[in-house]
Image 1: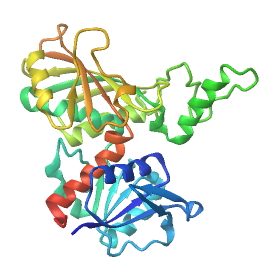
Image 2: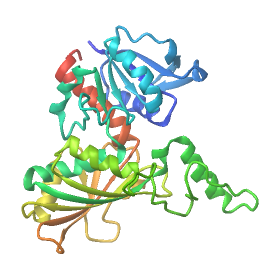
Image 3: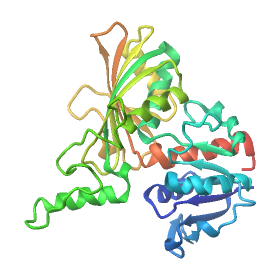
Length: 340
């Protein structure tokens, strides 16, 4: 016996990826509905070997459906998530709307699966920010061994984190660099993204950090341990898919790099590729389409007493969004609903 599953935002990058991953992982589904705004009604999307037609979310009745995977942004989620939750359909939300709500669990299944039980307060579960998700997968097994005091992270985030329009802007600007008269001015980004890097993701806050950087701090504390100090610099780079992170970790206790490498090799959701030779590491191009969070460049930081550096790469449309949402659905089904 399977579940009745809704995917809201099924025409977007993350929604389509959710459908792909539900099929790839053979999630037990008896019935599936794909939703989007009225202007997309009737549009066809693929689900395995099936073709599904988009329904208007505004007219959809969530009564009788088990769970809904939302990839529709905060504004639409604010309207439709309470409607679905009130109808008894558990919402797994990919937006930032509920991540910091104390009554809504923020889940990365490899890190804090026990928090799933908190869903019943609002019938809503939050999916973390893409940059946070891959980082906590990498940090948690090390934290369990040596207790992390402080994290300094610099991110190199692909444009797909900004949606289809952001990907189109990189593509069109790149082409325009070679065709006189076809230059493309920035619209999705504050500056040119082609052949450039932009040290701003989301809006600036009063302390000078961006909201993306604040998210990494707040979400790491909520998911892992509120005592961990985190400082982040988030940078958009001209890469289509795949987020990279250079992470410096300070521990309470000494952790040898070889032991850290062994711990990470055994940890769920992680693939270690760490050879000290040219190309002996993972880059964003190589992680696209993969479920794993890849860890490379594991090495001691001799400038502090108990320090370690790692390089972390993951497909942000998968682990950073769609995959994590499907893993939450699997956790919900196995631990709570128990149908499949």
